[in-house]
Image (cartoon, rainbow, N blue to C red):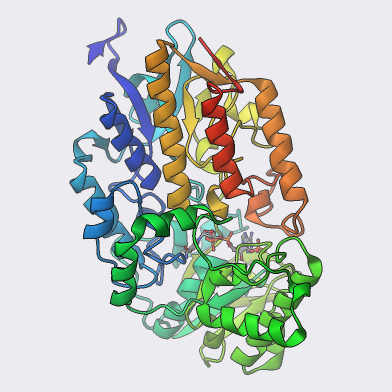
Amino acid sequence: MSQSSSATKIDHLDAVVVGAGFAGLYMLHRFKQLGLRARILEAGGGVGGTWYWNRYPGARCDIPSLQYSYQFSSELEQEWEWKERYAPQPEIMAYAKHVVERFELGPDIQFNTRVAAAHFNEDNSRWSVTTEAGDVISARFCVMATGCLSSANDPEFPGRESFTGDWYHTGRWPHGGVDFSGQRVAVIGTGSSAIQSIPIIAAQADQLTVFQRTPNFSVPAHNRPQDLQEEAEVKKNYRAFRANGRAQPIGWDTAGNERTAEEHTPDEIRTECERRWEMGGLYFYGTFADLLVGKEANDIVAEFVRGKIRERVKDPQLADALSPDTIFGCKRVCADTGYFETYNRSNVTLVDIAQSGIEEITTHGVRADGKEYAVDAIVTATGFDAMTGSLDRIDIQGKGGLKLKDKWHAGPRTYLGLTTAGFPNFFIISGPGSPSVLTNMITSIEQHVEFVADCVAWLRDQELASIDASIEAEDDWVDHVNEVAGETLLLGCNSWYLGANVPGKPRVFMPYLGFPEYVEKCDTVVKNAYEGFQTA
Ligand code: NAP
């Protein structure tokens, strides 16, 4: 630690990591293993990242616990016992805290510290990271582990400030929980967060009114206590189990069907859809090999799920209003527990705002479709400024004072989703252009972190001061990401993958679709002495 001439307190470290979610924790662990002086700066009061903030009722992972967990430590894998097939938020938090204790990360995490700025200083090739409290850390490496879904999307509803009741966002849920007993509650939004919380809020509240702009596809999760025999089997073969997961297009094993829809007879199609329905949730992505590239296959699956919605919702008109007419999987498919059945309750009302939108928030409620709905509490389940939002909120400046926000004004540009040209020694874990949100996040995170740690170790071995992506490699990668997305059906709706949920955000498909290929590409880059990068 040292003092600058202006007497501002400046800490000198090897690396700063922003964010104490699963990415930040593992990054810190790897840096410590390398002997680096590293510290995490975390805005929240605890670890867990997105799971720290998203404490809304019913929050739970929709990837099976045995797969949604770190694989870097066999001991950790063996000792941790998952209680449910799909871990609820508190169990994931407990796991994150266990990781911190087990790997002695706590002393190097600084909580309640929001980063305001990160500037690259060309004179000494170091990053100056400034907190909102005005503290400055000088570090050679700056790693943004700020998460893809951590910057809440707060639509500017007219009249919002006039509302006299309670206001919540699912992504910033009060730590003490909320009791809606006896209340009239509005939920705005019908994405994954809403679909998980609506059944629980409906069971608690006097009256629930759901404001839906676009209906979503959802498949029952079929959550249950963890099958102990399955767990024992997996624990016996964890290495092979993980390797198999990493070989899959979404980084975990959905036991995907390798055949296209047209390779099935109509009876086989029905059987396969029913079988997937029983497997539940995101296993439905594995129905047919061409689900996300073949319109006919997609139509079959979409119609099958619409048929299930008609079975689950008693009122045919309501079932119709809840049925998406878009591409299955174009927006992220949801996994639910009794979501559609909730609309059979007498205390639940659906308001279709596809045409009107939310017209106004009034003193006592929500006005939509020409009518005012009086409520005591409003829950906005309106999602996130995904992938770029958490970076945009920090004043990040690279070489020549180039602002990341300006560089990305027409859409994010990265090389491998990990680096962006003009920002040396600056890494993003699960950034735009990485497979991240289209995969099992923890699997992707581990691969990214290992890439960064290996790169830092390589620079040290080569006695190099810095590494930066070349513009050519970045341009090629951006073109490639777009090209791959263009071959799928995923450009065909207004998803957050495209930034379409945030007014004014450039419409660019942000994640990279192609997990095992991505890992191969990264491995090749390393093998070829970090091709596509410039070093100094
Ligand atoms: P989301 O999927 O983006 O859903 C937001 C909802 O709010 C949508 O229904 C959207 O309608 C609506 N909305 C947004 N702005 C609006 C406006 N101005 N007026 C009216 N409605 C508006 O957000 P999310 O549900 O928080 O989920 C985000 C992602 O987080 C998920 O896709 C998933 O990747 C992840 N997640 C995972 C889990 C899990 O693991 N179980 C749980 C929750 C979330 P439109 O569709 O019309 O835009």
